[in-house]
Structure formats: structure tokens, C-alpha cells
Image 1 (tube, rainbow, N blue to C red):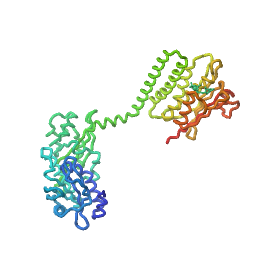
Image 2: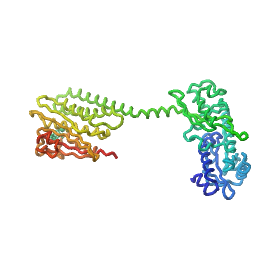
Image 3: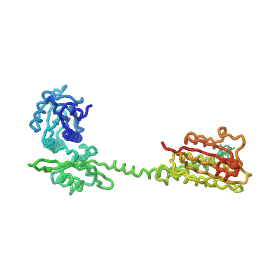
Image 4: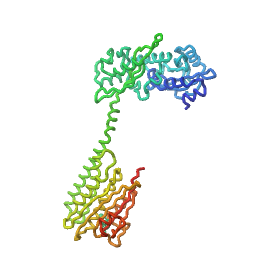
Length: 500
Ligand SMILES: Nc1ncnc2c1ncn2[C@@H]1O[C@H](COP(=O)(O)OP(=O)(O)OP(=O)(O)O)[C@@H](O)[C@H]1O
Ligand SMILES: [Mg+2]
């Protein structure tokens, strides 16, 4: 569908300033259509003295006459007469037209759109008696408001252009309407407006009282009346209730003056929306709380497992459960740390230290003391990296203890080296000076659960690499050389940390 500007450029002599005025009108005319319960069309005069439909809007409050889109069609002879009359006389003109497929005549009101000293377009309201609503007080009031807007349009006082205050975020007619006189006294409040005011504690009949007396949105109305332009304001009526209001002053020319004859307040209860906004603000806190709960749940699971293992006879089964408990506690540790952090990033060293303690506590015998140490720093890591990586490190630490210092050996030390390299990859080394790997060891052939977990997490989840090798005397790696004196095992991980 062509835009207003496209149609204007192709068919008419409308200049840019006039186009801007018409665009402002289009930003507002959903409201106009709602007030008059009818279809509205915007006609531009063409170069060959015809009128072309440049835009069309339907009312949310009434039935449409037009199932089809009329944009780019020309006014037919009958309607042209009325439109042309409005255009030339600069006055609102009523007439009739016929619509294909309808027997009854269609009412037509043609409103000249004035900009500066000229009429630049014609706005029409088209309705049939049959499609109209049964007149009640609301209908009469809205039509009277529409009538006032009509006069403002013909007088060049509506739309407000740049000063219009963004109508797109404003409440709509269906949300609630309060009609004011020039003293901000309520002349009418639509049922939805009454409900909204009721929620903010206005229980009495508002009609006849000023907004100041009612204690609702009086500042906004005062500003709108003083500046002679619409004011959008969000009123935090109570901590629970927030009203979004748009107050439009109704204007009239009186000699060379423009006077305020009253106003229309569109209002909407946005409490629910704002409540959700506030929740978003506390999203960080919520995420922390979730991590806290995940941690608690994991602790519950590990307690359950421990209870279960007490009933077991098989030493192998008890061991297996003890290991599961340790793995679960590791993940709980990550969530525990995340529950103290602001975002989804985590200072990894805060996890590694308690991880070492966890393994240390798990050491069954004191006859072969093992010292644990961590050097370096891994910086901050996203939780998606930190969680699997901590599980991996736990397995490596456990292996160092289990296989480096088995029963009968004399103990030693385990060193974790963290190095957040310049190349956006993280290097982790777990070094022990224990008994070392068996000569036929090959990581790809290792069938234990521990290294399987390590392999899976490192290669798939973390997209990194693993190397397991024996430490040698005067190891090319200084740390290894010092820590092991040529004995034991080195496991080295390289994990890319660059975020996509
Ligand atoms: N630090 C180490 N020192 C010596 N040998 C090791 C070391 N780490 C791993 N190994 C060898 O690799 C094997 C596989 O380790 P893996 O962790 O997969 O299984 P596991 O420790 O035997 O059993 P699980 O971890 O499932 O309880 C071990 O049995 C051990 O022989
Ligand atoms: Mg293991």
C-alpha cells in the first residue's frame, strides 16, 4: 500500500510542511474515528482537480462500511461534490454518498484540513444509519467531542504537530475518556474511566468536580491547558495503581486569540504493565534467587543419595554414590557462587578454591597427606563455561588423589594452575607429583567414568582440548618442573572463552 507521502508526490502539489501536518493528523485520527464511531478517509486534491484517497482508518468503536482498502482510489462524482465544497468553502459540509453493494445512502461529513492559511486536504467521516450505534449518553458525548475536533481541524488548531506528545504510546478512547470543561471540571466520564478512577479511590460521582478536587491527574490537565498542547503523563496514584493519561486541550479561535474551551483526558490503568516493568528491574535479584534455590535443591538431592547409601552393603555401590554426591556438590557450588554474583558471569577462582576444599575434605585417610594449591586466575567466566569446567576440575582433582596417591603411597601435592591467556582461551593445569600414569595409559582409551565426563564436557560443551601426560624432570613447563620434580601427572586443558 502506498504511503501518504508517495500518493502526495505522485498526484498532488502538497508541500513538505503540509505533508508533515497531515502525518500528524494520521497519528491522531484513530482517536477521531473512535470518537465518531465511523470510517474516516483522507482526500488530497490532485493535479487534475480530482480527489484521491490518501489514507483510511476504521473505528475501533464501530462497524466499518468498507471491507476493501480505498487508498489510491478517486472520489466518485457524488462524493466529490461534497468534498470539493468543503475544500473551497473552508467549512464543514454534510452530504450523502452511495457505496457499492449497499442500498441505503451513506452519510458523509467533509472536513477541510487547514494548515496555516490554506486548506490542504479534506477529511471525511462516513457512516450509515444502519451501521451506527444506538445513541446513549456515551455516544452523544463522543460525537460532541468529535464535532469539537472537527472545528479545530477546520480552524488549523488540530493536530498539534510536533507539540502533540507521542500519541502512539497514549491511551485509546476505549481505555477511558474524561471530558473536562475549561476549569478542569468533569463533564462526563466513560464507564472505563469511572472504573479506573474507582481503583484510585474516587468513589463518588466525579461529574461536576474538578480534577484537583478529585485528586486525579490535575497537574497534567493544568499543563495541557496552559501550554495549549497535549500532555502525556503517567500518574503514580498509589504505590499499586498507575494511570497513563493523555490530556488534550480543546481549542477555539476567538478573534486573534486561541482559547481553551475544555479538554479530553484519555486514561488507562497501566498498573499491571508497570508491575511487570518493576519485576524486570529486579531480574538480577531473581536470577540470584534462582541460583540459590537450585543450589538448595542440589543439596537436597545429595542428602537423599547419602541417606540411600547408608542402606547399601556393597562397597562399590557406596563408592559410586559417594562420587555422585561429590559431583552434585560441585555443581551446587557453582550455583552457590552465582547466587552471590550480580550477573551471569562468575569469578572462577571463587569456585576453584572451595572445590579444592571439597576434595580435601573427601580424603579418607590422613596417613598420606596431600596438599592442595591454586595459582593464577581465570578471571570471570559465564556460567555456561564455569559449570562444566568445575565438574571437569573436580574429576581431575579426584583422579590426582585416587591414582596419584593410592593407599600405601606417602602423599604429596596437587597444584591447579589457572591462566586466562591473551588469546581469549583459558588454560587449566592440574598437576600432581604422585605415582604417575601407567605406561600404557591413553586418554582416548580410558574407560573410567571420570575421564569420560572430562572428555565429553571439554570437547563438546566447552569446545576445548585435553592433554594428559607424565611429568618429566626439567619439564619444559616451569610450574610442572617445580611442582613435580619429575614425578607424577600433568593434565592440561585449553578452553576457548571468546564469546560469540
Ligand atoms: N592423576 C593421575 N595419576 C595416575 N593415573 C591417572 C591419573 N588420572 C587418571 N589416571 C588413570 O586414568 C584412569 C581413568 O581415570 P578415570 O577418572 O576415567 O576413572 P577412575 O578414576 O578409575 O574411575 P572414576 O573416576 O569413574 O571413579 C585411572 O584409572 C588411572 O589409571
Ligand atoms: Mg576418576
